[in-house]
Image (cartoon, rainbow, N blue to C red; front, side, top):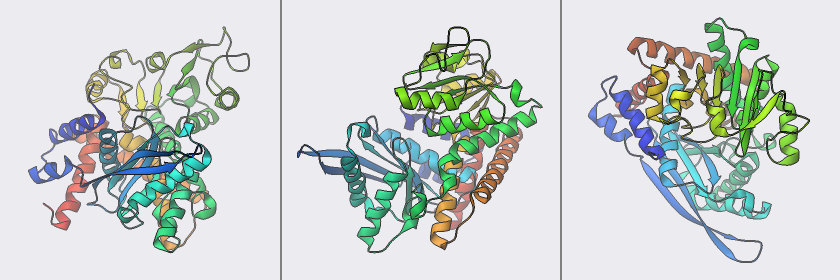
Length: 420
């Protein structure tokens, strides 16, 4: 299987095969502008010193400051971070944000750290990179296994090093120190807004639409919550340990499922959620190919591949995760008339809300949550329509259309700066 960066470069080439991209532009987009690799020493609770490897890849800033999350995960490596930073550059351009793309990560299992150790790791990451980041340079945000508390620690550490409070240096912070309430639900809300638009275009009804969701973290749960409240039928949900699927089309209640996960630490069958008549246990692999109308990958990369793409029964895939579908799978899905709303569009609600947070921080203003959600919906719908029109113009799938649209915008910025 290709590594994530090879997948990303294949997606870039696929777009280049559709429209003419100047050699200079293609050359600049095939390599990140900057790669930072740091050692982060942390004194552990047992008194021993342990060093963690951290990364920050700043891919392209033609359209504005670098923007991208930081993930804490034991499988983090440089190829993954490079791919994610490239996708961020594309994502920001797709939805028209004045940002470039970046991504960061630390090789660590944060579940094995105490709160004190996690805070020291977070602050150490900033100490190693603070000259390379900031509200006008590179604005990090939370990603896998990081959250608003981690961003709060990081913003505080950056402010201590600069000598003044800088709330615009990080997004996804606690509300009390410059964060916004809407940020926590924005990724899922953006994807759900697109689902509503697609269902409207197809003249279907929510109660007739069966949804399977892979991943029950923040994005997956909030999407399930929004869909359930709107009357959609959730027929499958999974986490890293397994899945629950409906046997007869009965809707799964995500609120009860969350209670179970919080109590037991995983999704599984018991009398409160699952019985032999209504639901059954399944694997993540089985969930991806189950009978449903809409599949929502909200977990990790490389889940839909050339090995299982032909077995996908969903009519529409909405990618809340980054890179869940490989280029080879894309070709199979397109031939099978499966609509794939790609990650660079479908999960762009998160970075859009981050842009709102950053804008309010640097302007010292405040918006209501309803106003923020309204602006988010407007940007997501407009971006979807732009991708839809581009796909029709070139007779291509939505991913290629998203990349074509983004690259055209990045090219215009490069030309305006005199880079090409």
